Length: 126
Image 1 (cartoon, one colour):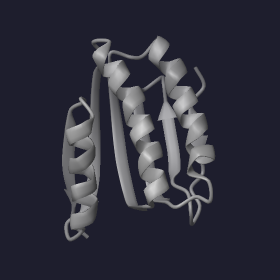
Image 2 (cartoon, rainbow, N blue to C red; image 1 turned 180 degrees about the vertical axis):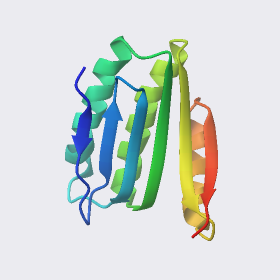
Image 3 (cartoon, helix red, strand yellow; image 1 turned 30 degrees about the horizontal axis):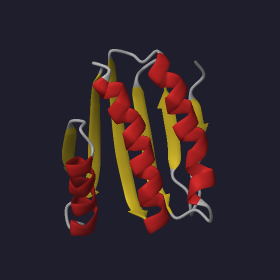
Image 4 (cartoon, rainbow, N blue to C red; image 1 turned 90 degrees about the vertical axis):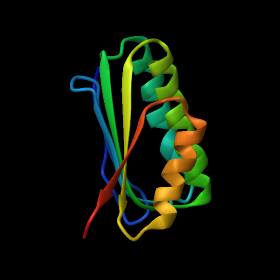
């Protein structure tokens, strides 16, 4: 399965999902004009990956900021990961946040309370 690689811009995060390594990353700012359009290829890719996932999938979320419409799309991504996890595959979501960014920490905790996948909060000191 080909990896999905999306270059980051000022408004969209960089995305690297590699089925060969089981390491997925979303990094940067997520304030696209159309969040659904931006995240659709990622959700579709995960739907395919779900058919034959690796035994362990690591997901690194390193967002500086995301808008409300992105938060719904990120939840859709997490729901696909939850389905992979429910199928008895190991999935770990690593949620990175800067030490003084309470909002990003709370956002991660909110997702953790909704999605039944192991979350790890990782503080980044500047």
